[in-house]
Length: 259
Image (cartoon, rainbow, N blue to C red; front, side):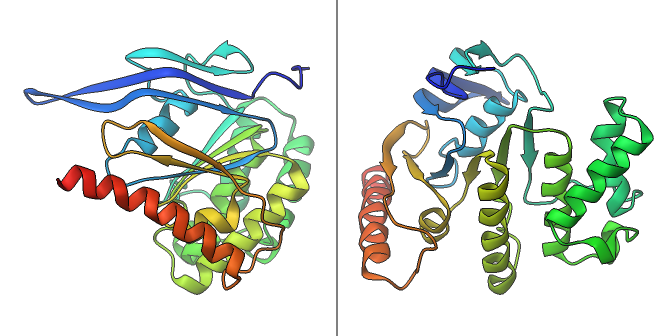
C-alpha cells in the first residue's frame, strides 16, 4: 500500500526531444508536476505544446530524454495495466464485441472465465451498455465507442486513467453527456484521471486542477487549483471568472510566441 504522502505520479524536470528528418524537436523542457491519488487533473495548452507527449511519458509509451517520470515513487519504464490510456479515436478492436473488448485485458492477465465475466458485467453496467454487449464497434455511435474504451481501461484494473482529448471528435450534446458520465465514474471509483483537452470550458467543468502549458517546448506555466463546488454550472459568474483567468494565461503565450 503506497503511503498517502507519496504522489501517484511525479514528473521531475522532464525534457523530451525527437529527431524528425534532420531537425531536433524539443517537445518538453524542464516540466515538473505531481499528482495525488484520486485527483482529476486537466492539461491545456496550444497544439504542439507537449500535452500528449507528457501523457505518453506517464503511460510509459515514451521515455524522457532527461529527468524522471515516477509512479508511486518508482520509475515508469514502460506500459503497465495500472496506467490506462483512452484515445480520441477509441482504439477498439473492430473484430471483437463490446463484451470481448472490455474483457480483453482481464483475459490476458490470466483471470478465470467466471472472474472475467463478473468483471465485464460490472463495467458494462458502469458505462450503461448492457443492451449493446454483443454489438461490434462499427455498430456503435462515437459516444458508445468511447464508453467501451473507458470501460476497457477500468476493467484492466487501472489506478490511473490517461485521456488524450477523448471527447474531441464528438458532437456537443454527446460530449456534454459523456463529461457528466465520466465525472460520475470518477467519483464512484476514486480513480486518478489526467485529461488532455484544448477546451478551457471542458477543463474547468471536469478538473480539480487545470495545468496550463506553454507553447513548445512545453513547460508547466501554471498549476491552478479549482475551488468550484460540484456539479458545476458553466453559466455561473464564478465559472466564467475562472475561464477569463485561464484564457488570459493561454492567450498571453500565443501573443509572446507570435511576437
